[in-house]
Image 1 (cartoon, helix red, strand yellow):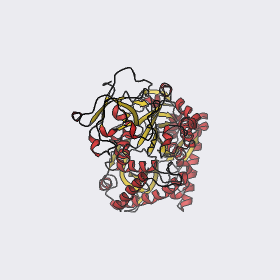
Image 2 (image 1 turned 45 degrees about the vertical axis):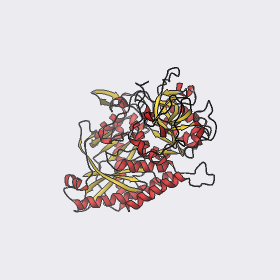
Image 3 (image 1 turned 180 degrees about the vertical axis):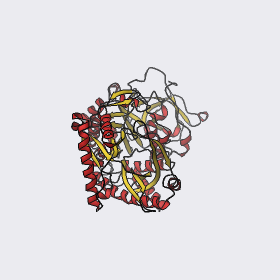
Image 4 (image 1 turned 135 degrees about the vertical axis):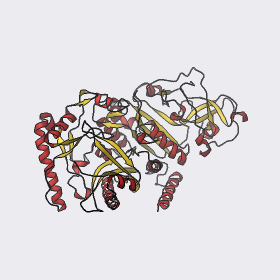
Length: 570
């Protein structure tokens, strides 16, 4: 087993609270519980969850406890020579990987745990049942049901994402748990992982979520239970060439969007709120990008002229559709000018065509003139060249999005955490590649460097643009809350900023609204702020152990921390 299991990293132990109620040495044969952490105990290729029964490990979707207290037995008397560690063997027979590989219970298999991660079974309020996974009488402060990638391909990411990785990666979730959950809750939490391999897994859950995750499930005994989804919804067929060859990880974590959203809605109906990324309705609006054409005629939100092109029109004829698209685009541009009291604009001659449920600036095509538009429409719906071969585009989107091209000097990314702008990053795609996609991405953390490089040293214009973008952000936050009745833990707004004809003044447009899980572009301070807000989001809602809604001590502690952070910013 040494090839399959790692060891607990020693560095965080000094800061962790002691969980053991007795300090006396543990003796061979004693029944105990140990705090198991899948991502720390297992190597990447063999990550085991403790499942409730063997069927939940054998059949997909596989569901089990990835972090929490599991039954064990001491196999060696604890002595002073052991450096305050305990040698144990697991006393639970059902450990399975995401691929269905099972632990052989007939093999001798022991592990060492720090003493503070071992509790006597007698310390719990009821005798240890022989057939129970979770400690009897225990009620953790928080139980997270995490829907994670269960396919063979491993998720990878470039350095631009930073140390926390992409939002679907094990690295991201582990960073959240290590930096925030352990710090604030100690070991008083659980993670139940549901491995998702394809749409069939999600449709199964969508059909029976209340039966799987009803009040009888151990996760529901926690004071607060929430769901988190670490997957990428896509409109492309799972496993198709465009998904497999446009990234470096074979399409890992890309799953059917309609099935994923059906699963999210079903879990929410079962009484389990979504705390990452957003509730299903808001998440669908953002990931589909439908908000762009829905709000294009709302003047104060500054969305560039945008339209939806029905798929049926494109399947009839991309050439014929081109004429209709340009007519609709120019109509929206004229209407925008009228609503703002501006002079009638000229015709649109360039823009971008894009797909919803697309990630990392993929599936965005720049076009010029009617022929360029026709080509872009065809490539996004019919065939496109990938790896020097023509490849079909098997996606089920009901419409394509076409948007006016906005002249700009840079993009301003505003990171909003619990309603406050916590970071600003200045970026730009400095070139258009031969395939008419945007490339040569650059970024600055310094406003001065951005103004010097991209705005002709017009520092006043960038200041003006940033002021306008922050005012726009307040409007957008009101819109977001209108979709979800709550302030999101975090969200990112991207804006085009360009110099106007008047020195010191800027023109701004809304470019993108990025859901929680956005790239933080290796920002050093931002991840801890976002993760802390995510945990506070998990602790929202009534305490299940307090019928009258009393706030429990853990929530008070989190709220106090938030108040302290706010005072520090002030």
